[in-house]
Amino acid sequence: GENVEQHPSTLSVQEGDSAVIKCTYSDSASNYFPWYKQELGKRPQLIIDIRSNVGEKKDQRIAVTLNKTAKHFSLHITETQPEDSAVYFCAASSHSGGGADGLTFGKGTHLIIQP
Amino acid sequence: DTAVSQTPKYLVTQMGNDKSIKCEQNLGHDTMYWYKQDSKKFLKIMFSYNNKELIINETVPNRFSPKSPDKAHLNLHINSLELGDSAVYFCASSPPLLSGNTIYFGEGSWLTVV
Image (cartoon, rainbow over all chains, first blue to last red; front, side, top):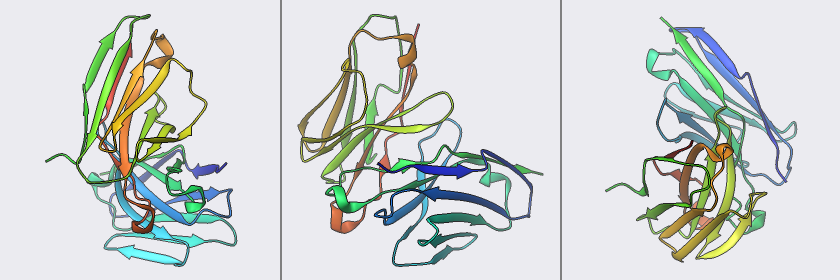
């Protein structure tokens, strides 16, 4: 099955600086890579996703890059703000199982924005 | 108007008891899931149902039994609760395959076994 590794486990950056979270995956059949943000006591919520036919996707201050050859994908947050503080999860999935395989999540990165 | 709703939100119970968590989605999705999030925040899939049919059953003790009466509902029943079952349980759903595999989570059910 799929295995997703995520680094770092904790990331502290100054407000206004950029933050980068990296993930690797093991299953070359994986073709969908979402990122979720989970605030304290809340549910994980999708913030951006990328599919295997695209190398980069951007949405305002958030961008995701994908390197299928190296099986790496990364989340980039620019101009960080206090409200960006949360736990971020990367995930990967493949449709090869008929669409109900679910997502395999990384272990999460606790992003702390220092004022 | 909550898309994926689960009840109860908080549950405190004694070891050995049996409890259920209910989940309903009004998104018209075919696939529903149960995920467990432990104290270290790790999200792990437990079960996946597609149109009421069990697709995934990860290595979960058979004390955990999912029930899907229809494709909009996926309930989780837990027998003989143990201390290690304390966690947050998230129900989730996703649209048909051709629409993508984005998963939408419910608000979570905080289970504490004492």
